[in-house]
Picture 1 (cartoon, one colour):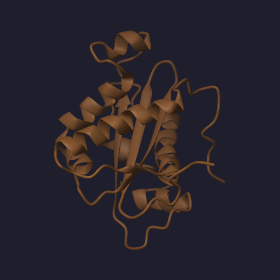
Picture 2 (cartoon, rainbow, N blue to C red):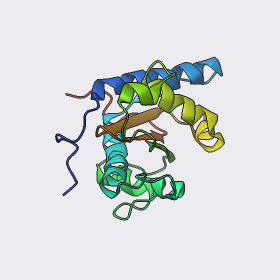
Picture 3 (cartoon, rainbow, N blue to C red):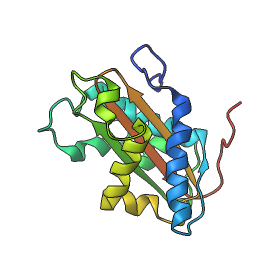
Picture 4 (cartoon, helix red, strand yellow):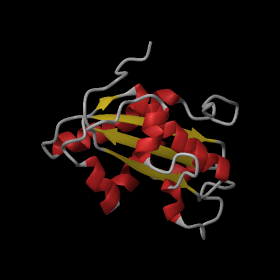
Length: 173
């Protein structure tokens, strides 16, 4: 059984994923790349990584190894997480970008995201300013994306899963 994404620990409004998607697509469009389509199956794959990061509190101290953010003992590969939620991966390429904000301890969210317009703008800016993350965002072959974010009042965890092919679940019922 897969861990639940619901619970009182997550103070993040899931509707704000659309804001991050808009930042990603506006950036891709500005570079002449096609936009990515939202895929709820990939959102579930992103949820598996974010939940793992949250449970392990991997970023509770600045000294933690940032490379651990992409490690998941239950689903070691992105493809494993995508398959676990029932999204077919045969012949498709997939990639993932992750973010955790460790410096939010003891400060309200509004103070932590200053001088950004929103948490989504902060996350996007960090992705865009990282060469590895930017490479994934600007890979033209990716056609769909799933996003999941957890905010527990102290830390923010985010993952974006990119994949080729047509969305399995373009619209949530």
